[in-house]
Length: 324
Ligand code: BTN
Image 1 (cartoon, rainbow, N blue to C red):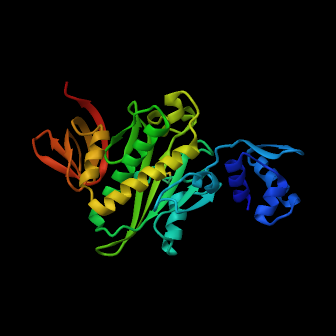
Image 2: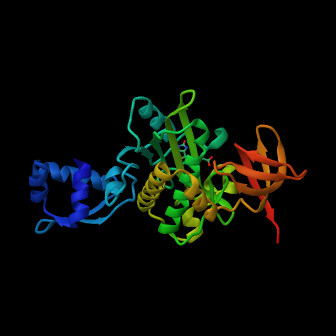
Image 3: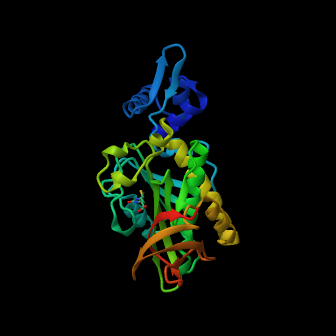
């Protein structure tokens, strides 16, 4: 009910308590209670006895009513589960996926107390500063194709940031999103599969939006930046989530129809890895080499110092320079 009243206020700008009551079949007192509840969560709503309520300003909470406004996606965010605080949206999304939630369900939170990154690292998630969500996908893929999903998500994150801010983020393989060489967003894909087929994938996206990175714990502090720090002004988290879901939806839908080939080109256009000298540590070794390309499946090809070309399936990559 509260969400419906909020949406009506946002759409109409100004509306009387009586009109809202009639529309939602509740008393004017009940309307007034919902309005006060919205005010308590940070919405600025004016009221006058003559003209009724008018919407002034939103606190930029990532609540479904805000995100759904103007969101035209076919899959992503068809249902959005909002939590003020969670340990990790990955866990919540995993749980609803195991109970059979459909593809496109998104779990989003204002804060994570145990946000996690790749390889069990911490993903610092201070309240109401960043964007933290996990989307459930159920593509008909072989487990080896899974890497393509976070690669596509990386393209979506870059495109969304480019739409909502003047920044020009780039991707470091497999899916670190960087601005000026510092990390601004990351993607974590966790899958549940049978021996040869994927049951579901939970794709978690974390973006440092208005995050004060100097207050983040080490080692994150040294390597992270935020959109607001880079562009010098507050960035709307709601707009970013809307844009992220829309971009991810479009890319994922294309992927389901055409496969990875066309998206590989999009990924390469935003990538900062190929052509760089890199330090790679994977399950087998730590080595230096030159990143040559990503192959048709999305794996990174690196020419090692001894001339051998290695296909990196999973690992940490740092950029250590480029040829002039
Ligand atoms: C990485 O770069 O290491 C991946 C970071 C992924 C962070 C997001 S925030 C939303 C979702 N919930 C988590 O606990 N992690 C992902």
